[in-house]
Image (tube, rainbow, N blue to C red; front, side):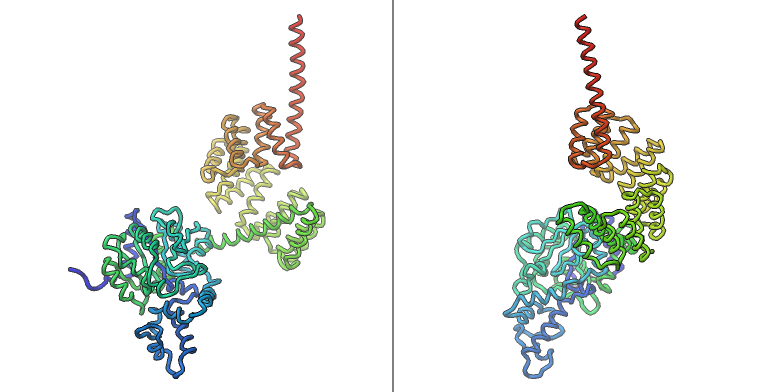
Length: 586
């Protein structure tokens, strides 16, 4: 018996079904079909809101009889049949055409005004989390906004393939390496499709691409009114079995699926479900689908990403300032511009830039002290002062005190912990102190390849070679192309394990990845000179390294030692040759 009424499930039943499909059918994927209702909580007007605003504009312009906007709408001629203020969303494209007739660009500008600068709501954040952490990576949308891509970017997830024009539909395929956002009415900046013909008819390329897509993806419709003929026409044209599973149509109280959507759901044996809103639905769905789902973890990760981005930006500016210290006049002018580009002495970073602008270490020291007197709670300024004291002033005791102060103010500052650990390990040889600090780094980030390699170096220095080897290998497994860690492992194999064959393999691997890496060149040259006794090859790599870093004390010392060995070898060879010559004469 053919049903004449669309099935309606409870929200709990739908969420349970989606969780079951996710766990038991690994060849089944979900595709999220989003309309303007999904963007409402991001402060972007819905299609209905815009249609009603524009209808009000038309009423203001054209109504001379004094009728209400609702009464005037019925005879306005916007469409051939009746239209009311309440049903305006159904006639969005016709209203857009009439409102912006003769000046379509002003219509696009109106859309840009409503969408520019809007941030993704919680629902989009959670959708991004689902896309990143599960196999459900497709969004099909009639929206012009960029909220899906923005949410993925904000949380440092994988960037999506955004197909915002029909000329790009060849890139839409069921087997995807990255998330897909299919914008079937184009992007805000690509002449978005708003006219009646465009909204009513889906371009042929989109029809073919989406038909193939829906054979593998179950559509979950959220915030979509179903008032355009393009997507609805495609769904209605599909045969029974052309869609993987059943369509799930989410609607809010007072906005049930329209007649055409009801027909599509009946045809494909779909389900409708009432939801409290886009954000609320995504929250409950993420809790079902995302492994170890934790809202606070998402917030902390996002906050950490923002801090790291700001820190990286400041650090790069600092490095640029310092790199320009002994340059040409143009470079000195650039330093001056940088120093003047931050309001003087109004933030800890302003003090940092002022310190970096100094060429006299004593003046730098004085600037740091003044800055810390004004900002005694700035962990960042204490950290930068510690770096200055250890690297420039060579005042190790004071540097350690500044690191301690920085970490007292910000105990989980990863960079400060790492720099402090490096100092006590390399300079003080305080392996236990360094070990404790790196253990804290690993608690903060267990899969950090650099921390794992650092821990391996400490264990090696303590004589625990087997455990050290395991930490080096764990780090290289996580990040096999991290050149610094590859060189460090090669040094370990050479210096501690006397495994020269494997050591040379890793030195060469590092130089394959970065032929101009000074540390790799210098350490390999040292290995060739003093372990493998390949003096000519060693000189070749020292020469390359010194071209790149002619002032490096380590390189100059190693090169000098190599030349001494080569001279002694030449003298020894000369004596041996003379002795052989005498023997031959006898």
